[in-house]
Length: 119
Image (cartoon, rainbow, N blue to C red; front, side):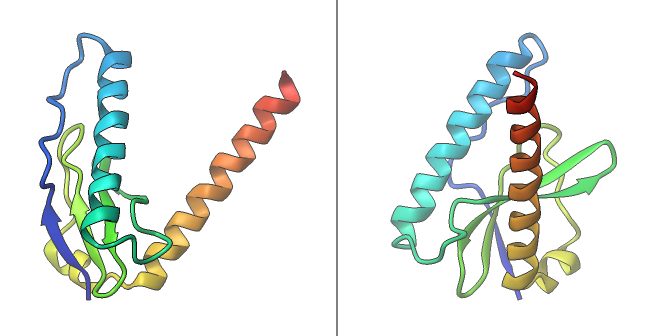
């Protein structure tokens, strides 16, 4: 059963003034949080620092893997700040998260290959 916590770091405020600036702020925040997770949990687990996303309404609930055992996730609180229902979060297993991360990696690799082939 997963444990879910709010982020110990302050997420960047949502801003539609400059989408590029907001995206850069989110990327920097995510990297700082990944470093925090690796340092706090002594880097235990190959998925520590990975982001998993769950479709909610017109956006995503995003979580970072903070620890493998017990499975610990941190709600990123980005964008609309969506979260999954508590019962859903409690039922997540490391194998579920691993499948999600691996699927996302394969999708990113596929699109990277396509961009490289077109260049």
